[in-house]
Length: 264
Image 1 (tube, one colour):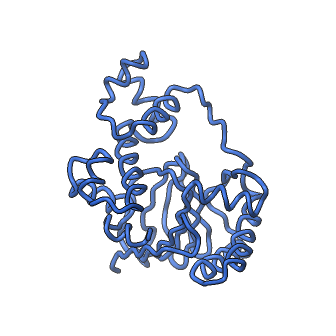
Image 2 (cartoon, rainbow, N blue to C red):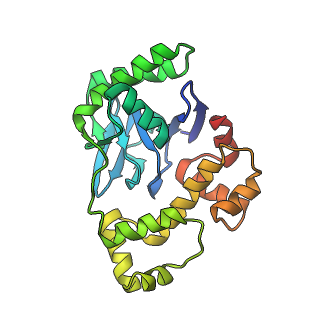
Image 3 (tube, rainbow, N blue to C red):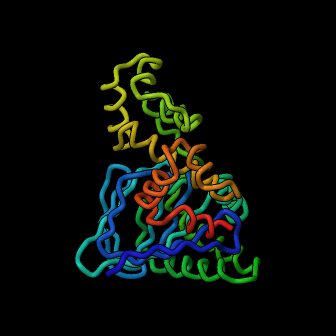
């Protein structure tokens, strides 16, 4: 089976629909700043969310919070097909405010096995491709209403004072910066080993893995604009445009140019 990804813009600003048909493609462990809400159309795959692994099958919903480390690999030989909605943080806040009268929800379960929720998500996907904003608004409210029982209101505190959390927040603030992990460790008063160990325990990733993903996330934001790809690569901290293309394909399975078309 050929691995294909198709990204499509939708009727709601800040929401991109990705249609994936995958055979042997495996996502490496990564995280990003947007919310993902997906539906498995056929097949199954093995995935990690946080520090737990799950088998996701046809009809299951996949829910990813911003910053949550996850991966995905084939399970069995039939391949898998899914629809994924990538929702920017600002768009998700508007969705939560409109549907639930709250600023934010954070999903407490990575995999939801609920046929009614799957039906509601399919209806929302259809409405996102239509021209009736009121129908889309009602459909999105139906999905979030189904999922809110499996969610926490407000972002989790998540041990805000821990070492890995503090350094990760700093990296997010200046992720195009060229500071090395050794320099960050020195400035935070710990050894390189202690910093790497803290990241592995909290995120399941090394600090350098996190930095690579933040470059990709920065590029994804900039692709919504009109700057040349070579300038976006430089601004996001990549060595060159080819480096940016390789990293986006590795994490999202799609080229920067294709992703830009979907965002417009």
